[in-house]
Image (cartoon, rainbow, N blue to C red; front, side, top):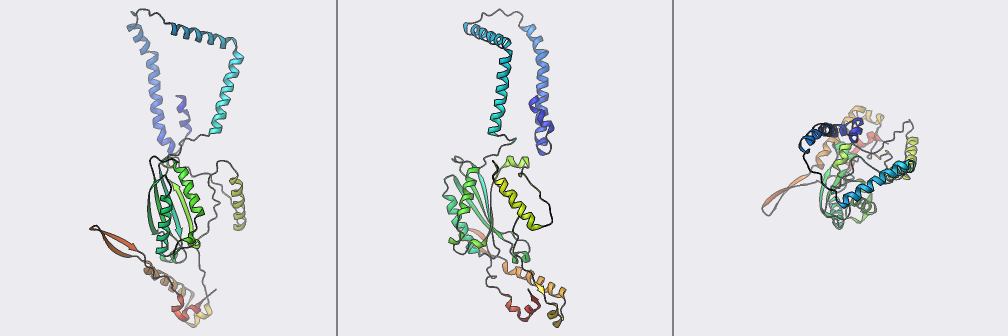
Length: 347
């Protein structure tokens, strides 16, 4: 029962999952102990009192003699016995330290998710070409069985997408059941491929169109622990100093054993365009600052209609499929069509 004692000190989701099991086993062992000390001896005395004495065999006699000799030896040499026990205990601690331990080990589920974020104005054809090329590369990996690809916009409002919100190319990779490498090893292999991949070789896309990418393997056991790594919080008022400190801490952690991935917490946001209204020029048109802001908001709200996809129905073997084709109407778009109105803004 002492094995389940540490569960008492665990809190959160782990306690909710394992506490009931630990209590059940503890109560079952307690009941078993009571029966073993009371019922079993009484029944043995009642049922086994008329049994004939069985003569021991040669093997049993030798085992008993060896056991008796070993017990007498340990009693006579108490210091040596104690030293051996301590040495074995310390040796077990050393082996555990070298091997490491974890409450819930990562499960090898054989599923990997890859997400590539691109610029919002990247052409659909370029993203499709990139998805095709990466799919072929992924399928060349021996342990990969299937690759499913989706292309979609992750932006919210149209105004946000105009200022650089990206769109995702997502891959769901399923590994073979008889794979030679584990899911974690295949994940590392895919990360290495993406790090060395030259996006300029893909027609319709370039390295500047790629904002970021993420590779993660599904792990149900990890979700139970809620473990997301170690977070280090650095507080201050000077952003440049904080960024410098964060980079220094990341370099220090990079030399620490068993550290797999480091994020310094400094993320590059989406591109922004800052417009400064020339109020003197606006007054000549009878416009206030709020009027200009409202007109700009109205402009970008209505530009969202240009990015709406067209639905095309395709019949394959008699089965209709609806395909969403993005509208490329924003390509080559210029604000010059608004004429003198651009004189209201500057900077």
